[in-house]
Amino acid sequence: MDLDAYVTEHLPSWQRLDALSRNRRLTGEEADELIDLYQRVATHLSVIRSATPDAELVGYLSALLARARSRAAGTRSASWSDLGRFLARSFPAAMYRMRWWWIGVMAASTVAAVVMTWWMLEHPSIESSLASPAQIEEMVNHDFEDYYSEYAAQSFAFRVWTNNFWLAATCIALGVFGLPVVYMLYLNVVNLAVVAAIMINHGRGDLFFGLITPHGLLELTCLFVAAGVGLRLFWAWVSPGDRTRVQALGEEGRAAIGVSLGLVVLLLICGIIEAFVTPSGLPTWARIGIGVVVWAGFWVYVFTAGRWAHNASETGDVEEFERGYSVPVA
Picture 1 (spheres, helix red, strand yellow):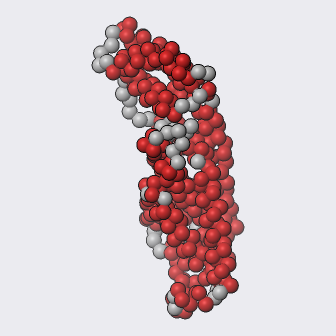
Picture 2 (picture 1 turned 30 degrees about the horizontal axis):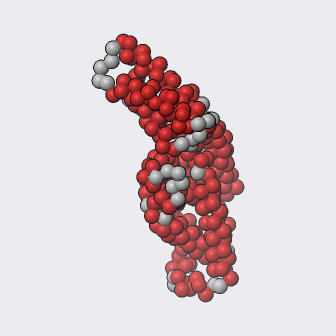
Picture 3 (picture 1 turned 60 degrees about the horizontal axis):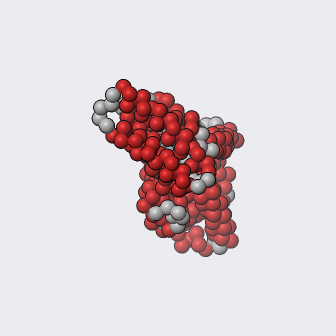
């Protein structure tokens, strides 16, 4: 398709829709014209996204249609259906779109943690340089296990939730700078490897994995998602492609904000598990089983709902567009 010819042919319709959407008062004929033009321009957007998805033109038409839709429908308050649409479409689609970033972060961090743990186990002298024998004994026999039951469950769940979300939000907010995200990941991996090595070296590996696995699988995955999204922001600034750096950061930034809001829900689930399941009297296999089931549900959620919503957006389905996405997914 000749994009320049297509733009020249339909530009008058776009300009007319722009003018109507900015009018404070519309006659009956103008209101009917606005709705008709909205439908036509939505079709134009669908054609452009399918054939020659020029980022600047798609952004212009998307903004134009959003303003026209708001003008036609009037203002409305958020509803539970908006939240359901976000959780069922926008959030999983954004995570699916960025999957290779956070899966890459997850793979690299896991390998680094395993290597660090193995290195410490092979060099026991490192342990003595980190803490005194008394401190290590206290941690192994008391502190690590007591941490999960030190506070009332409701209070502990809230503390864990807010702390984890703050960490995830910081990864995303500082993502454009790149290095802070890498540094935060490094600290997290080192801390995990040190505690794992000490517990395993003192014969308490079963306790370590029995307590950290129920909530840790999903909790660490959320951190990796946040880090991956942050690094995607950094790369959008370094290599914006056909877009300007401002456009690239704007588009990826909106998606990042949507992901951070979705992580609120996932990290709340992590906090509930860590407060009520991890320190519970359930058998170890049952606690780990709950964590594995929840973690598996996360992957199913991303690669079913997320893939479906992402693919629907890429086809330029007008109906999907008209339903609206609060997070850009294409």
